[in-house]
View 1 (tube, one colour):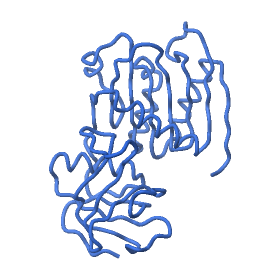
View 2 (spheres, helix red, strand yellow):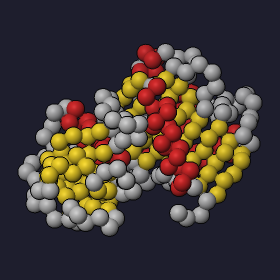
View 3 (spheres, one colour):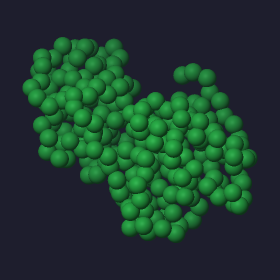
Length: 255
């Protein structure tokens, strides 16, 4: 699982520097719940992450702004949801499943009281934090922006990103196919599974279609029948995916 490290930070400037550094080095995913007012402090590194092809999920909150106020703004993100929260606005970030921070300090406000910010580098904690964000808080917000899916064909190393884009395309009634490279040692369906994508169950982009809180998967109609596909460490699906190619057109033969 790699090296785990934790640090308590009591400086606004250092906490912001940690957050910016985590986003700056992101390669796959940034999931961030934060006050709307924090975004200008990290807007440039979020935009750079988008340019690198990183999936950026923002759950924003404010005690002062309405949904309409926030919906008029543009944010450097793949998906933005807004929650008209009342009370303390927690900032919680998760980057590439292994690093992030949590704080109730108002990092955007230099005049606010400075509390503790916990920063970490721990894959176990990072996955727990992402699950907590998606399961407990993501649905509380309303979607105000979802970027167009990537042009096809495209091969996704990030299964999460493949699920999001597949959901968008099925929502818009596109004919969609997938070639899945199978992860792990389960070869009951071969090394590669491909065919039409007939369903996506997920809880990230509107409309949410999951049947249990943390469900994010793709269903492919293959030579083996309908196969459920999860991420590399998926346990409830038929197979896990190390990579997913999405495309329009005729499917090739399964491996």
